[in-house]
Length: 300
Image (cartoon, rainbow, N blue to C red; front, side):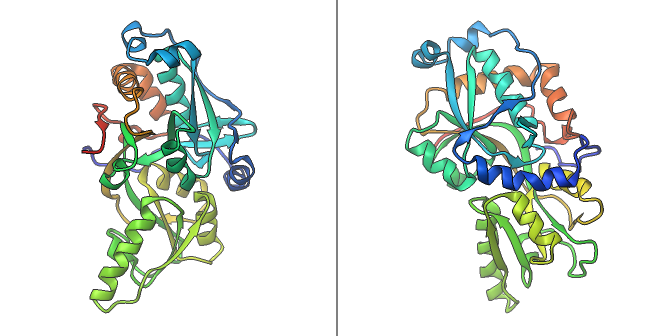
């Protein structure tokens, strides 16, 4: 896995616009995700189409659960959802010959919704972890890692490992693995006789970020593909607190045993071989989050 670098440039978006994402996310939960900004439709690939289960070919579409408050992976600009994931689901859907219909769902409700069969897949900036694969199937199309943001006047030192959170108040996205890792870090803090991590959970990453800029929390952690981007958009209100650590693959989630997984993996593999894949990531300055091969993950 390549080392993740900070984004070198970011598509222009005002901090006020980013701040609106939290409100949009809360008001749009369970609602249609609106239009998505994307390139013109590509031709379907017959070999990939052949991997699509007949029920979906007959329907001509699939239903996916999405997040809309995790820039630059996914966020709203007016009534349009933009970012890496809308481009990826559109490109993959084109290759499969399917229309992809997104619905915004609260992040911590997505896995239960997949397990209940409500949605066919989900694009929501998921990390692929052993714990998550016990509940859903996953297919990779990017790489990520942990990185934390603090205010510029922070004097508590760098955060280059989870136990560096001891003695800090941390604002985190509910349902994310950053929450789990922070809770586990508390065990290390206790064993070493250090102050505990005070954990605050929020419905969206935007709300967690606002808790830091407003002084309610010391730091917030997120995927490295998002942290550098958010810091750039903060107009000096935030800075990265350390290096990227705990590198992982990321991708989509599907119900366990989904017959769509091979089609998605084939679509991602095809995209990775084309200039379009790099164009999607380069648009947001995230070439370092690209991967060389898509992999499928199921419970052992």
